[in-house]
Amino acid sequence: MSLDGTYDAGNIFAKILRGEAPSVRVFEDEHVFAFMDVFPQSKGHTLVIPKHSTARNLLEEAPETLGPLMAGVQRVAKAVRAALNPDGIMISQFNGAPAGQTVYHLHFHIIPRWEGTPLGRHAEGMADVEELKALAAQISAKIS
Ligand code: 5GP
Image 1 (cartoon, protein in one colour):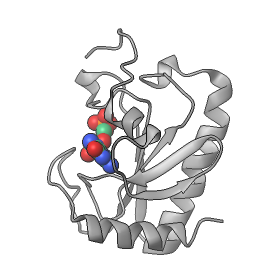
Image 2: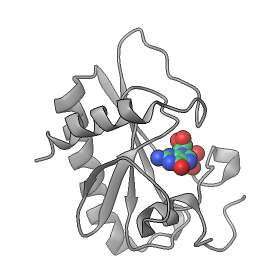
Image 3: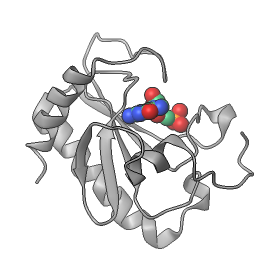
């Protein structure tokens, strides 16, 4: 899918937001929902999405949504750091299939990185849900 198109309310993140599909929740507030990526590229890979949005990508998002959304990304990234003590944190966001996007509800990846540990492949290799739940509990406990 290119940058052009219409929002599909049947996308997996919309289903997660409506409670129609399962997710391992890390944090939510009025504006954002954060949950574990089920095909993580590293231990603690977390996604942050706007709750009230039909933007498929960053270019489509209402500017007034970006402030609370990025505040949520920062808040969760700080909790990931506090919980998992990574050496670095990669924050990424893809727009359009050629850029690597596979789910068309705006989202940010928070990917902790450790020296000497290579990045896993994007959107491949399903994690153990119990492990994700344990990580989510660790991260969620550090939300401030
Ligand atoms: P994108 O490729 O669009 O930037 O990122 C989509 C992300 O969603 C990928 O990292 C992929 O692993 C993740 N993902 C795809 N399907 C699901 C799902 O059903 N649940 C969760 N938690 N993550 C998903």
